Image (cartoon, rainbow, N blue to C red; front, side):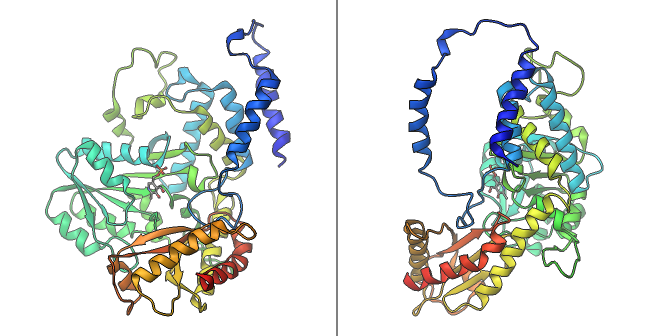
Length: 458
Ligand SMILES: Cc1ncc(COP(=O)(O)O)c(C=O)c1O
């Protein structure tokens, strides 16, 4: 689609709608001339050049990429109205769009019933899930794997709950024996299973976590902020396509108590779009509060009545709604985008296994590839320095730049995967690439060749 054309069309559509209201005089206090704007915009555009090229496949670092053009157009059009999805009074159209996209997300996870809403981030979405956990099990703590996102220990502290990290297995997944032993103590009310860890993309065995938790009378929350949309690849057993995933952990999400997914990661959205869903709609009672200023236009549910945040961009819901019209959260829609990234990660891991200058750290489960340079005299400190040098040399190369990220791993985690490397310091940085753009699939050979050269230089 032609972004210029549809950005113009978005502005026109809103002007058209505005023209249906009586004309009025615009106040001069905030008026800006085109000449003034041109000068400010020139400086602004120059400042924005100080950025990494998230759009380009040579950016193979963090979970970052520009939104889909449809999301940009949807966001811009709605932003010109600037609805606030806190209440139907703040923006009925986008509040209803939000309910529709949340229902689509619930359908994607196979939830028969749900209550949920969008949030400004995965952090806020997880905070809400843990808040409900606290209200349902006052005085009991939250268990999560040692490789869960740091937000869980932080938010437990915010909520005054006990957070209990559980050790992980050799692939970075929650250790089920350790979890069972912890739950046997009776102090835990909710377990967080991570469907796609931030560091390595490891998938906790949600089905097994759920079975253990139910035996112990414990709730299960799934943090699928990063990995959630990969459910679209679950159980796809097309022998011609290696992108399919074991269905068991993903199917189990439908039986868990809550789930978080971030459309601003794999849902092609701009930042400001997370989501939390609860299987039991009656948890809505735990959000009850009074607002003398809002909720006056109808008795229909206002989203602010079931969320901790007040103001929230209606534009975020609009962008997601428009995107889902074109690329719905189905295997044939958005699933195709994720499948390409996963195939890229699997293909690259094959190249890394055969490489003399780079070594695969762990087999990828989703679209995150972890690796480190092969050194003549390896040690944790040497790998740490060489990884850091590759990161900065790659970015600094003005003719053929490449953008990576690093991941700090403990000495014990490293030794479980790679024996015989002297542990002369406590852990090491390795390299990590999230291949979340479908363009990465065609770019993998070039990326690998570029990084092999870089590894030999560092
Ligand atoms: C698994 C997981 N949970 C939570 C978060 C936090 O989400 P956000 O950055 O949107 O606050 C992330 C971010 O990467 C994540 O990967």
